[in-house]
Length: 64
Length: 432
Image (cartoon, rainbow over the protein chains, first blue to last red):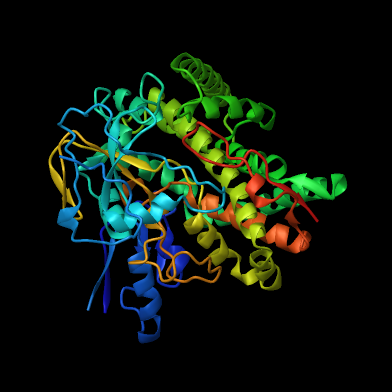
């Protein structure tokens, strides 16, 4: 599983950072999502999925 | 075409095609018997009965606004979320649109945005603006403000305790904490903050103020901010306004002077009024059934999920999110005609059983709680990390310091502030 983000769609809400700070961070300059681990471990996948569905602009997607 | 059947008494979701929807291009027939929106609940903390009726009746229903005009109300989660992220539904409601929201002559705050001609409200201009603002509202920046918010909450509770054992949460915390926090963030002197309440109420008026009063408030507010900007230009501080002034003065096209003033106004108004109301509503919701508050007292680790659950559960929400369509678009199987105004109600969608298990139960440990109270899509609430942090700090502090807290009046005596776009209680009297 690989995480892909659309920087243009991202509104910088930080919801992904709140949900899974081990996988996601935000730029301190413009709030845009930064992916810390693009290939999350098996045990992190559930929380990553929750961050994906919780993104208010659907800017994060998973490529299986 | 008729959309005027009385609400179904037995909620029976039929095929979406059976939902009659009028087109915005049609002249509004006089005397059409539409539901008036917003609905008013009979009991302040119970959802209006119309919520479930309209949601189960149709994903989109025709309603009458306080202005007298008609609009389409979106009632279900999936449709609401999709619509909020769909750029074909714009925030720019033309002044000559058929549906003005507010009763004031210019249609209220939503219509005024459209006439501003500013690029920061929509599309690429909005995205650029959002990037400029986002740095002030990242999770890390907001977390770094939490100790200051906590100190303020403790100071306010100290005062309540000294004057106790009765207080009004709306007046003693709600009206003070969020405006102080947003004032600090933006760099507004604390001694000036009391002036915002009047300006803010006028700007957020639905039916309460005349256009002349609103214009006067906007003008005074604008003049105040222009003077503050001059002062900060001479003597910059470590605050958002000083940062934004730098950006404006660089004249690189990112933010001009008018946009700067509109931005400061928007952040000050949005940054305190909504959270101020929510502090009172949260407290009232949790104390109306004291077992809820006791659950938080017994296990403070649930504060974050409890805050999101009261946000989802809010029975006295704002009017909703208006959008305008300039082309025919299908929503939930219904055709919405070009020229229509659409209102998304996060509160109604937040109780959609298609999305939330047992939606009418307040579950303070609810997981996967992606409510729409902060919206969705590119206009998702900029200040939500700050609003969440403030609500969490207030709830955690009340539970820790005043575990015997209870409502000092019957919940049915709670009075809703009337005539504004944002909704809250006049008073939330408590004792301990």
